[in-house]
Image (cartoon, rainbow, N blue to C red; front, top):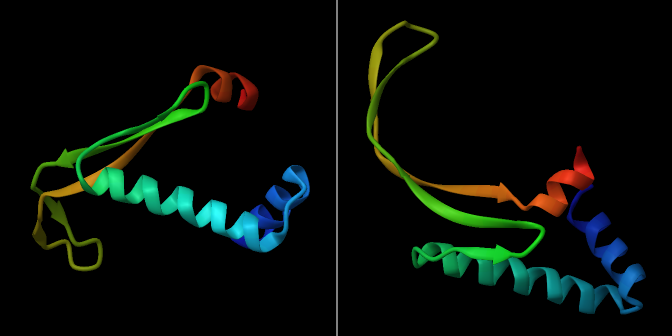
Length: 90
């Protein structure tokens, strides 16, 4: 499912226009992004939790040349599925 298909499904399920569904989806993604950027976490009970973890610098290998390279430290987004969501998928 891509973004436009999700917007169509949200509009149909909620009985709202596609414009309103798109605004709601963009608001969700913007607010999750802003919260994670500040170092916070977003928890939707039963569905899951987004958080940010720091990945330490490490050495890697260029697969084309075999040369050892340094990979910089960075923040990565983590998602931990909630129990209801996990049970529904499994």
